[in-house]
Figure 1 (tube, rainbow, N blue to C red):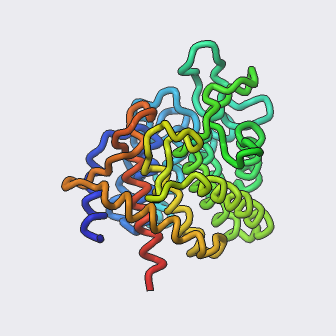
Figure 2: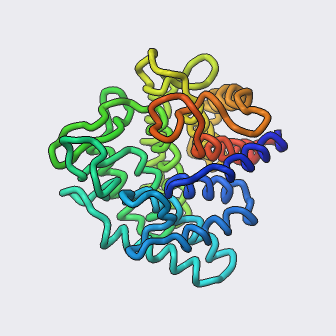
Length: 324
């Protein structure tokens, strides 16, 4: 399996990447302990930092929250090397989020600075952003703001009846742009909530960490109600006519493995992660490309993607930590 994961990593590094893809791939390599890879990726994200502070800005001119996915690896590169170049990159990203990024009327950082759909304002929240922004804020010590952002995503996008997140809302009009329980979007949320839980616990905010972990467990259990026998999910969780997706399954597995490792997810959830991990492992081709996942560039059909590769690397890394 180690050789297979190495192949997945090599293929991931061969893929073209937008800001969020650079960030999640670098984060996956950080979690895998591959500093010979994630530090150069942090370096390049800073080299491609926009004047206003957004990291890794390749083909992402509209992106507001996505560039923050690169933030933690820049901070960790500073901690590893002592080079202020990395700290400055992280700080500039933080200052953009705090002072430059467009926000909703109630202070939640928007996902983009434009609308990709006619008839909607740019003042939109995408559930993807729960992974991009709050974890970076938390590791930078902005714990109150991280919690504020999470509460905003819950307020605007959480479907309390289903226990799941909707995908996109235009907060200016109050209308949903995409009122669907997108599996990968809920996977992004699971991963983001786990990272914030750990950052808060590390900084001594135990009560807040447990509150977020409790919410994450609720989201996880809601997702698992829709898990298929092979461990994966339909692209829209509650729409069985949609294609079967492995990205969300790997995001779920990574969140479960790391949560068990850190003690905020019960080990009984491991079977769900193991089933998904085995199935997705069987969808890796001879080149290391993972198939039957939510595919780029529009993420509305089956294909391949950098984030699927990254989620598998994350799941493998945390799974290895649990092995006796």
